[in-house]
Length: 390
Image 1: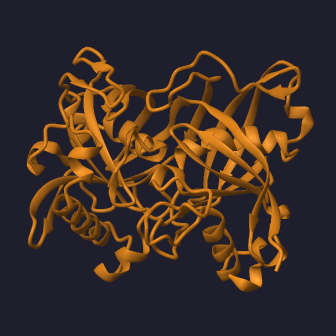
Image 2: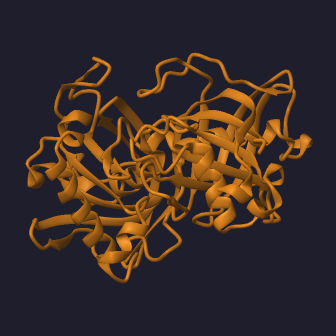
Image 3: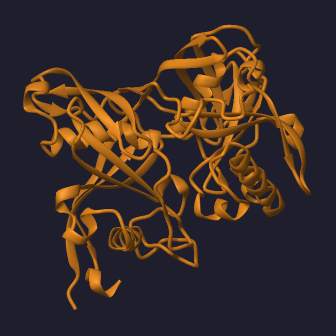
């Protein structure tokens, strides 16, 4: 047998990286959802890998680097590109299509422009191209402001993003009406609810659908202070098991699953995060974060592990919850009304802007915005065995 060669681009977006494909470059059986597509992408990334290393694929053995993206000209009349995201499990033969990757969103506009998926009339010789993205997983609009120089995407610059080693060009990303498409922004009808987790405990929780379904808890209720880095959580198997039970019971209470057994097949969503008031700490890079730098601290888990920085979609949930008085996120930030929030994460800090409006008993958030960066790491072809042999 000879290997298949499929055009692909390996890109960093925000604090994540993944393999990007144009839909039409995939083999015909993989151009539609289903087993063929999943098998192909699993093999590209190198999953399932019982060793947990993804050595025989493009994955980086973390939730932040085990990702795939498929882009196509938008089927929505008023959008430029359709963005489909697949979160690939590392040790299981499973791809979760239930949510978005906010970090990789920063790379979608650049890839779409370079592949001719955006009308050339919308791309200036110099300036900023505004790319309207349809997020196909959650049926939401995202707007990326992509810098252009001499008619090409500008990737290099002096914008620094905590969690990314080198500076790059700044990409402003706006998440329009980010309340998740699966139901109300607060599916339990409460800004703070009581989450009962048999065998673990009962916790105050803010459960929100914005950017991505997320369960926010108070760090103190879990025995943490919010300054934890990855090794403090990921090296504690008992803690990870408790977080997974919390996530499963939260998913059930949010109406995302009908039985606890379904949580296993929905690993990407919901996320679990814990919040705390400001406190000084040393980030994973050694950078000092002081109480003057942040409004609150947030730590979030993705695919069963504490994230090394912050997922972009979780940052949308944080920004949304922070501007709504009375949520746990808002209270940890000092309470009251606000239009932006600065929070500390394991790699440093991030600022997110949001605008909220309460209509009757329902909260609406029109837009959440944040700055990220993106860069092409490699482009060419990925090689995998023939599709029929997978």
